Amino acid sequence: MIARVHVTLKQGVLDPQGKAIANSLKSLGFSGIAGVRQGKYIELELEDADPEIARAAVEDMCQRLLANTVIEDYTIELDG
Amino acid sequence: MKAAVIVFPGSNCDRDIEVALTQSMGRPPLMVWHRDDSFPSVDLIVVPGGFSYGDYLRAGAMAANSPAMAETKRRADAGVAVLGICNGFQILAESRLLPGVLMRNATLRFICRDVHLRVEESRPPFTGNYRKGQVIRIPIAHHDGNYFADHETLARIEGEGRVAFRYTDQCGKPTARANPNGSSANIAGIVNEAGNVLGMMPHPERLADQALSGTDGRAMFDGLVEAFG
Image (cartoon, rainbow over all chains, first blue to last red; front, top):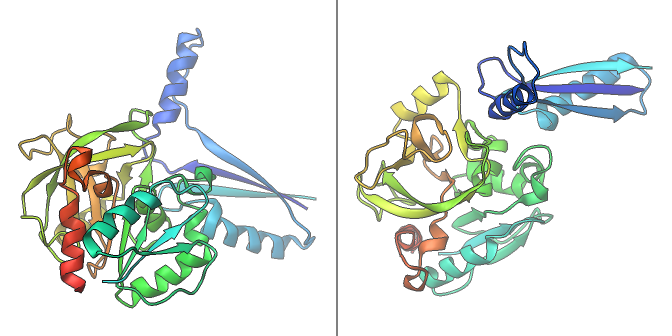
């Protein structure tokens, strides 16, 4: 089973890297960009095939290591 | 005083703090490898600067989960003094020994230069040898030093007098210009509720010898030796 974890900065937390990316895109001529937020994508290959157990395990991993919940939110998708 | 320095793969200020501590203590500290979950009892544990685990995932995230840090957390909870400098501060924040997090500098640049700090509290064991309001010069060298905490946490830290150092100009004014990295309220260092854990981004160990053009950092190590004998 594959778990796909997206880690993103919480609303209201400034993202200077996202801002720099937005500025670069604008200087390349891309218009209509209202904002850019940068995050992380983490893919986990899990041995457990039970989605409930897998979700609980990945949730625990996010809380304890994959995300810093002071500033970051995360979403988990399971596949297979 | 007995002291230990935790060494991680990627630490690069461990030797500097070893030299600074030896100068003040008259004998060298223990150097503890990050895999060690037991080491002799000490009065002070230092988590040094550097790029532990190459800053993978987030600065300090991997180191915070090492066996030596689990033991450091246990001892901090029991009242042992813990000092985290630069990457050490990031590790203490990731370990939740200190509130908040050190984010990427607002300028996105790595900054390496001397800054002025105002000592906010004169309190043993860490800052007892400084005067409250004293302005000192200490170097910073970091990419992720932008201190962030939510409003309630900030209000609590401020209300409890837990800001140890603030970035200021040389007159001691915490102006926006004197803030090198975008830190909330110009915060450069904080202590935990009990006052036995200090995290700071500036490097006192890098200005603790006249040969390095200043000794403003030395008072911290001399103060620790005075506090613990």
